[in-house]
Image (cartoon, rainbow, N blue to C red; front, side):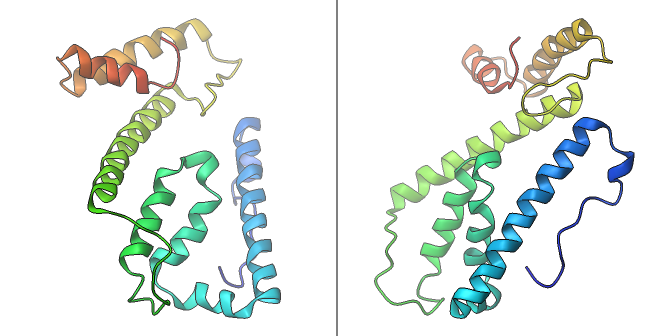
Length: 180
């Protein structure tokens, strides 16, 4: 938020075609967010000012809404829990429209831990295989070698996590983003 206009990355011209596509996508998302911010300012200044004055949970919520396609729903649900916890501190009228029992909170924490675990596995795979969410491999790379690396990496991850229990190893394999 603020006066800065979204721009492409400074190193855009040095990127390969795939990274340029990702950079353009990220800029489009930033442009849409900026358009929402401006429209909110023009149409509802009270809400706009609240976005600037209210502490993290509310601002984070509005940031996370647009990220659910890429990041899933769990981070957004964590923001809702933070809003619920700080409802009265925010000076909002009671009752809070959100309801969360202690059991709901515990289940959310478990989903959050599982999400962080899943996200870590996804990031590990993409980073070391040099690919994206869809498993795209550059045509300049040897696809058979990448397939072999994929198989080796999942086994390395299972070993690294000390997953001797077959149930846990199976769980890690299910989180793996690409066919083995």
